[in-house]
Image (cartoon, rainbow, N blue to C red; front, side, top):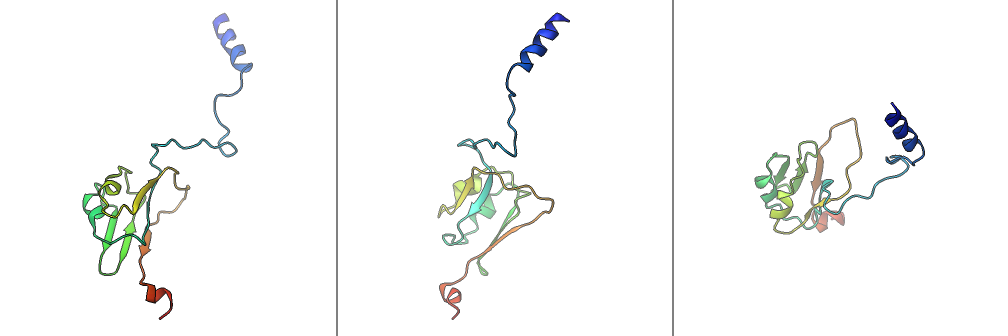
Length: 118
């Protein structure tokens, strides 16, 4: 009983060991794998990321220049990042924000003439 009281008083005199999350965020580790990002301007739509993805969460349509990714099926293994020939894929260290709805990330590459309105 006295050992327990010693522990209680010891813990009351120290500051908390946990962070007050919404107000105090932890800096992500360097090796943290938060979410997948694609620089669509550098992508050549070769489909290598789709072929090597173990969870089949990436879909590439070369003819339409569309890259689609389901972040809720991704296991963040990083194989697609390693195999990308143009190195346009990367794993960002920050996690994606919380949500109550599932969604897909749909990226399209447009020609420069289409961007100019021609």
